[in-house]
Every structure is written in structure tokens, then in C-alpha cells.
Image 1: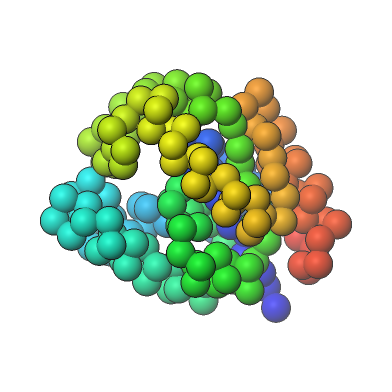
Image 2: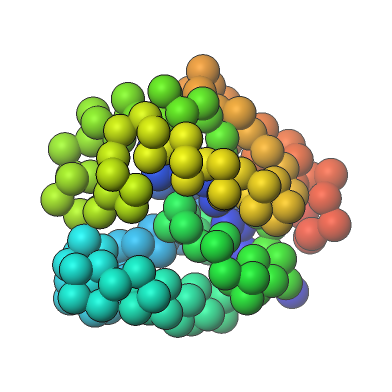
Length: 180
């Protein structure tokens, strides 16, 4: 069995950046699930939310995840809310090693605000600002924690250091060991 490596965490936690580093070190493919979703459906996440609501978006997100789980030797950066559905959590647990990238709300907000593509591509889910981040983390953090094989507090880590922590944890996990 060739497991997948999933990165979960809130928007701005570094899933895409760290995921590229991990994939490069493993010699694996890297995929950003949100980018795959947008390409498949020809709309940004913001547009899907506007036309289909959160339920429509989450249905599309689950379909993309199911398809990605058929891949091999792939590092997958998931959308921040992928863990909201039990079936998504179960699917990821069955198919791969899950690394939770965690940072404090202020760090996440600063990263989100510094990313010029965020406002155009992704909707605010609870009004925006620090209050939104704190509100959503209150719901999501227990789900991230429950599904994660490793938790990497990445606020002060470089992407390379976060990748080191993920790969070190994988080597001591139940999954077949990556060759690096």
C-alpha cells in the first residue's frame, strides 16, 4: 500500500507551502485540493459558495477528496474545512498519514491578510477578522486534533522545519515509511 500524506489546518497555516517541501523531499507529487476543485468545476471557491452555498461547496470538496484518495505517492494540502464532515475524516484516516499544521489565530489572520489571492478566491465564513478565525478554530481544532497523526505548531517554524517534523513523525507511525 502506498499511503498518501494529507496536510490539514486552518487557512493560512502553511499547508500548500509546507506540502510542496514535503513532496519535493519525498519525490512525490503535490496537489492542493482547493486548486483541484477550482480547476475541476471552473469556479473559485468564493463563486461556488455564492452560487451553491456551503453545502454545495462541501459536496464538491468531498467528491474531490474521494478522487484524490485513489492516487499514490501524493502529498495533498486539503481545504481548511475538509474535517467538518465525518466521512472526509474517515477517508483520510484510511488512506494516509495526516499532519495538522497549527498556528495561533493572530498568526493565521496575518498570513491570510498578507495573501493577495485570499479575498478573491475564498469567502469569509463568519464575518471576517480575528473573531472569525477564533470562532471557526473553536469548532475545527478538536476535529483537526482527532484526525491528526501529528500536530505541528508551525507559527515560528520555517516550511523546511515543519516538513522535518512531519517526516520525523511519519517514520515512527503505522504507515509504510517514506524513502527520503
